[in-house]
Image (cartoon, rainbow, N blue to C red):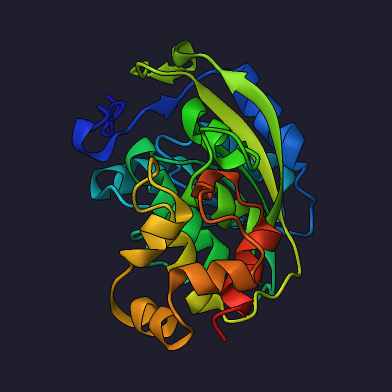
Length: 271
C-alpha cells in the first residue's frame, strides 16, 4: 500500500498539479538543462516536472511551500543525490543562497496564479544568480507582461518585467494539462534578464506605481495625487506638470502609453 497517496490539491494555495507529459517535455526542451548546471524549480507539486529536470540537469533545487507534499517528494526522489528540497515560501526564499556552491543557476516554474506578480517581483531581485527562467503563468498574466506601450493591457507588471528582462512567449497550455483543471488557459514564457542598471531605482518604481494608480486617469492626475516621498520630490521640482514638461511627456497621456525611456525621463526630471 502506498503510504503517500496522490496529494489532493489545495484550493487556498491555488494548486493545479501539472500532469501532461507533452507539456513537461516542452518546458524542459525550452530550458534545455545542462548536465553540469543547477536548476531551481518553484512549486514541484507531485514532481512531474522535477523528475524530467533531474534526468537532464546536474542538480535540481526544488522550493515547495506545502508541508503536506514534503513526505511524497522526499520519498519519490530519495535515490537522487542531485535533488535538494527546500521547504519554504518562494516569496522570501534566498535562491542565491540555496543554490550554493553554484554561483548561478536557471529556473523553471509553474507559478501559482494568485501570487504570480509577487513572485516575478521577487525573482527580479534574485536575477544575479538566476539570469534565465522558463515559467508558466495564467495566460492573461503573460499577455499583461508582454503588453507594449499603447496597449490597454499594459500596466505596472509590464513595465517591471520589460525594464529587467527580454521576454518570449513560447506556447499555451490547455486546462486539461493539470489536475484539477483550472478555469483558465496558461502560457509558458521565457525571461532572460538584461544587465541594465536602473538609475534611482526606488524612485523609478515609486513613480511607475503612482502613474498606474488609476489607469483611467492621465499621468498628470495620477502624479498629482501621489503620496509620501514621491509627492515631496514632485513638489521640490515644481509639481507634476513642470516635471512632465521637463521630461517632454504630454500631460494628458495615460501611463499605459509610456515607454520605458519616457518613464526614465520623468525620473531624471525629479533628480
